[in-house]
Length: 331
Image (cartoon, rainbow, N blue to C red; front, side):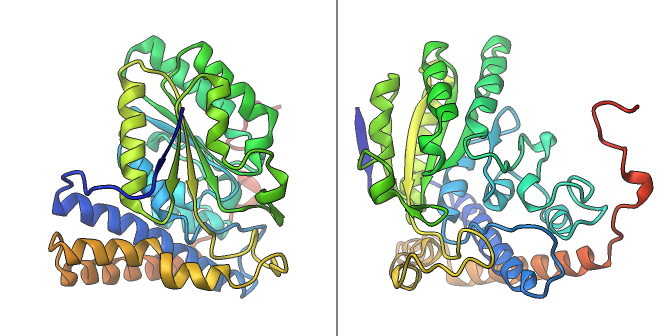
């Protein structure tokens, strides 16, 4: 059965927990805005896909996860990495292709990973993440460690057979798995309004025998509540859940995308729906967190991003001697 979460309560989150959530969302936003600016200089190699506007999803889900848990990401993975605790400076260095990067500068934006944080990796393969989390969820089930595995994927991947097979397998094996469909309305430049047969991705959950829920992706608290229920259910042996998070990405599919397929919706989302604006308004209006503490977080994050860029630019690139390291087989 599919349900909808359009808004939610604060769920007795402490001021410190609220500040932590705000810090994660602010870090993602500032990181992405700065990468957008830096990419235009031509110093960043490869492709970059930005997560700005979608911060509430990664933050609301990962707030419930700990060291037992793992996530699999997409080509738009910076936000997931930050929310799962990957070092921001190492991420920036990786994007710049430097040896101090999280993957020693060999992966770039679309392949950031940190297994020590439970981040299985961003993934350039559409629908590549769901099969990975089935394996990790199966391992947790057999070990009995209470771990949960989460796959973030887009509306394009919602049509991939790998995603269907993974959801089916997760139910058949009753896995502690959560599938988070991040529906920003477009698979690259293709609108989901005519490329996806059902109105809602979450409606497909019934076909795989799992609960499905639709969430307002501009509302951190709505995502947090839906994810909390899904994580608790998975930890208790209740099986998988499909969560569809609906929102708007602020930048194009990739940096350089002219975005001729849409007009006006981004400006409207930034003005009326922005998750950071809504979060600040809610916690200050309810006197849960003082404005000055939120402003202090803004300043701290701004410095972190500035330092990350400076250190990335100053770091060396991998050399010829690094070419055959970090490989499965050396010949």
